[in-house]
Image (cartoon, rainbow, N blue to C red):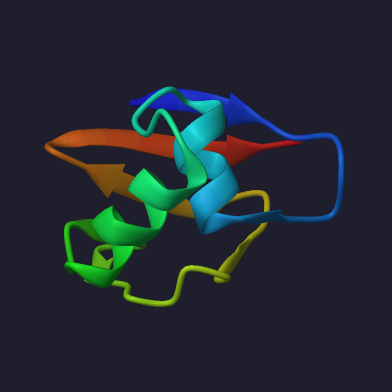
Length: 69
């Protein structure tokens, strides 16, 4: 599992996908989310503005990330 370090209270899911390199642009991240290709804490998430906090996990294409502070 990869760790994604954040310095704020939370990060939006679409921003997290860009930060970890899974999406090149915000538009690409939004499409990935709206298509149901991204899971948050083992559930499909279609909310592009979903707030992720320390301890949350998200995954795309079999690669899982853990949010850490």
